[in-house]
Image 1 (cartoon, rainbow, N blue to C red):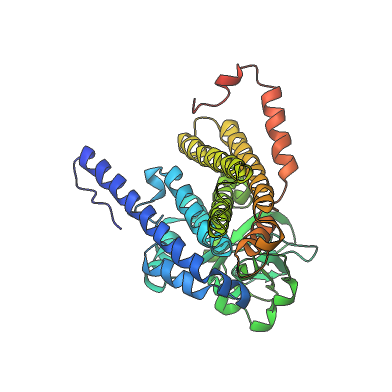
Image 2 (cartoon, rainbow, N blue to C red; image 1 turned 135 degrees about the horizontal axis):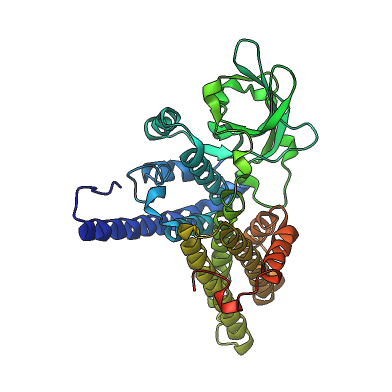
Length: 393
């Protein structure tokens, strides 16, 4: 999916747009295939091997690398969000792991040294390594301790490690500690998972309502030794803005894919029962269609805002608004779908119960109240007219 860089500018832009449409068509096709085996994948409650094999074969694992269709330098965030939405529509667990992979590649793009990029990009291109970001932890969190020989030793554990052992190159942030015991900040490192023993992986942690196949286990990193060249960026780069808060638009895109899947499943159920002529069902389907289209408009605007980077606070707060709006859209879509399908629609083999559980679980992203409060603080202190608050207008 390479773009020809030696074309004249107008032709190059046309080639890029054509490539992007091809990527989204391919993703839509894969989403249909994923949806067909989603129930089987959910029942297995194991890593979605088949789905990631399809993603690898389609070239979607490396789609954001230099020279690829969604190369971060192309500033095609709105198209990237549509890609994430489509994968989420096919299977939310796959979407969650895939979004973590895309997030990791973005952090590498932002903070890695050139020789590190070459090494990690090569691992992806040649061996189809899957990346991820495991930041969440409990009281026994990760520390990265410098050793006298210049290496670093990890202690502690991470929770909600989506993809678990099948993520071969996770970004694992932790407190960086020098040889004198001084804490230097929150440092990212990329851990080669072949250094993790099987007994360090705790699947008993993951007993969720939904998202079973995201296999978001607890993993201990006690005693793992890494090189200085495995450190990514400098201390506290992980929380650097607007990238940290701005990244919320990516998981919001996956969530909206789940809402689209619920809409499609609900409509199909009503069509099978010949209930689409009922005016109350029509009313609810109409409301759901409006909600989902509203979500798509949010994604498009959020993508444009992210690519502009004209003001950090604007980017952060627009991302916070987007994640809040899409959460509400998803919750209301679930409520309306429940009214449409009733108790009978919640029974298997109908897909609604699985989609309901997956989306409800995935919507529980961290700090939703703080994100909304930050938006309120921003607009309260900004004296611009409301129509001029956001540079995308």
